[in-house]
Amino acid sequence: MSVFSSGLQISGIDDFMGPSQECIKPVQVPKTPASVSGGIMRIEVDDGGHYFELGADGSKAALEPTKITLSDCLACSGCVTTAESVLIEAQGVTEFFRHVNDEEALVVTISPQSLASLAAHYSLSLADTLGKLATFFQSLPTATTPLILDAAFSRELSLLESAREFVEWRLASSSPTGPLLTSACPGWVCYAEKTHGEAVLPFMSTTKSPQQIMGALLRRYCKPDASKPIYHVAIMPCYDKKLEASREDFYDDLLKTRDVDCVLATSELQQMLVDRKVDFASLPLSPLPASPLLGDGPLMPHPGGTSGGYLEYVFRYAAQELYGVQVQEIEYHQVRNSDFQEIVLKVDGKVVLKFARANGFRNIQNIMRAIKRKRKNYYDYIEVMACPGGCTNGGGQIKPEALSDPKQLLARVNAAYDTLNPPTSGVSPSDSSTPSSLPASSPSAPLTLYHQLFKGSKEKDEARHRDLHTSFHAVPKLELKEPRSILW
Image 1 (tube, helix red, strand yellow):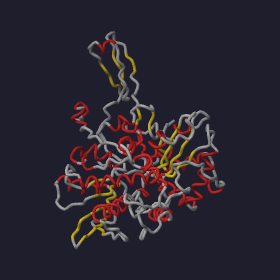
Image 2 (cartoon, one colour; image 1 turned 180 degrees about the vertical axis):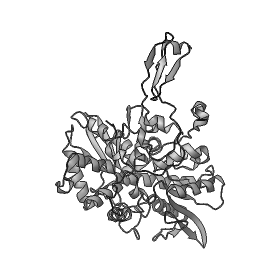
Image 3 (cartoon, one colour; image 1 turned 90 degrees about the vertical axis):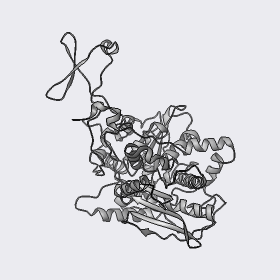
Image 4 (cartoon, helix red, strand yellow; image 1 turned 135 degrees about the vertical axis):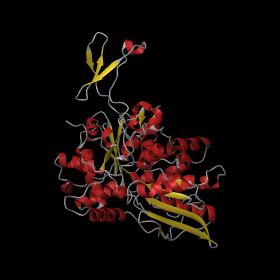
């Protein structure tokens, strides 16, 4: 029986970017005395594709297939997809239920995009969907009452730090000539590391995604129960987030744990409800347990587009900080297609800021060509997402039913998501460091926590870089790293 969850098995992710090659770890070869001492080892492959080690005395020993981890996957450039779902074993429903017990404290972070997909599927409001999810998770046999968190809280911290990073980037003479590229989309990050490497990585924003910021805050500052180990699950709109959670960069050597233990796609959660015969629409509503990571209410506003609002947030902040302009209305201009749009800021008739939003690999590839050619007067900042249509259209979202129109479903998901988007014009910043599009009330809970934890001293600045930033690594081409893997 397959160890993968049904949602993962039936995922139809089709953004394949390059030809895959045979895995360089087909079998596990044990370290025998002969192999350790430099003796010759012979391996035979039978007609069925099974591997056998041949002993000096003519004996044959079967070799077990090795298990490929997500870390192996991320360190190999043999195949480039944004999901690589066949390797995701430790990030599924089976593993999730293995940790639902009376020894671990369950914490669930839910993205607004996933919430919108569930709300559209069940024809509910976002608030009711969240309340019913709280009821479901609280019905599980866990050590403590599960803590349900809104990823919009950590998303705002990510926006604050992204805006600050861009201004520092723009003012620093050492910054490379070219746009600062967002890095909240792990599919795009994986593609950049494996395909373009050092030609592109210097342009990547090092600010962590909301998923990983929430994990860092939870582990270091806001433990719900100090006597119980935390099992942190994130509900996200795409499978790529599983790859992100599995990066070695997000493993804490001191705490001996990952910031996020498990990521479930929206469709996996919905399939979980079906498999357990949960009548989700009839579930009662439960309040969320209090937490300093919840803000002032169960759902925070989420303006600025379907992928987190990086473009608008950073644009407004930069306009205020660099040019003293408080942007009231933002006018988008379509460039090549509906998934490639730009906005500009003019001062005295001159363009001083030029930002863009690019969704989908077709647009990403055009950006890569422009950066490599060092195109002049290119963009200053680009919000990059792998999925056409942004995160509400992620590969892990609930799929349309048979014979139904995918575009109509996406429209309903976007409509649900847009209920979180208040008008932003005319909102005044609470202080000189706050963008005028700050979505929460002034001062917001995330902003208060940001100042409390990351501003005011050298130690807090070091904590800011540790908890809010990451790094990226070029992955050597497979033919250079493992020449023997090339198929002739």
